[in-house]
Image (cartoon, rainbow, N blue to C red; front, side, top):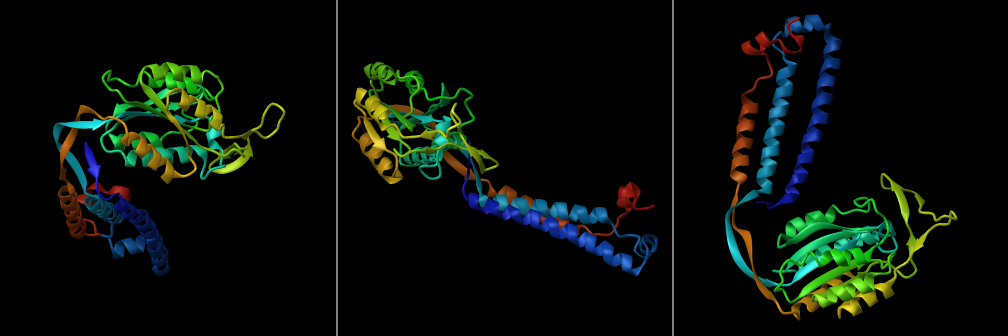
Length: 345
């Protein structure tokens, strides 16, 4: 297991492509200037030890040096000690709607991105609860099993999109059914399913399945994302809106938030419906709900100690920097024997 302490320093790697452009421009400029003084063969006789390969090699070594220094600034850490720790928490499964209707932009930036923001902020406010993630459209798909690894959960969350499931539609009942298999601890008294959706339900079986889930001790909290006014579903190519989704009559489809369905599902399990317009309010309500629940103690393995690894990259960076300084741009005996780029001709 590893951690990256200061990821912002990765932006410094943009220096390398800038250097590459300057380096190539300098080579071309040198060639143009040299042509003004004489032909190529005459210049080679005047400076026989000049080597293009050595210049390229020096640039590559310098780039490696800069890359190592940047990684050293990021300060990667490696977990060195795995411990079993006791925690108290609730099992929470997030079921996220990834159907095409979630591309509607009646909430910024769109319904799906808003859903991901909500879940990310909820996770950021958790301490010792176990979480799982389900993606659903026409069918439900297990995205991440129950875990205490919040970093991995957020990584999987960000990769979710409307193309990950070929079966389109909105089968909330399938998501609820799948969540029943997620809760692997029979002694856990508080099981929470959080459904984030615009409420469109194409199967009309959600309430019945929710009732069955309630009998197993699962409480469902639904978060409605979208507006009652609704909006069209954009069809984009390379981030540019090309058109909007049409129905069989070639009319633009307007998808609206169906909060009633979400409210019925939540009420069936004695949960609650939460409007997803304000991220802060959603996070606060979920936080209050979880705090009122009884916490169950469970064991989890995690890395307790992380050791800095920046010194290795700092050493490598200094090594490549010294190597770059020692390299001369003129040919050496071994390079002449290699005759790279046919420079001796």
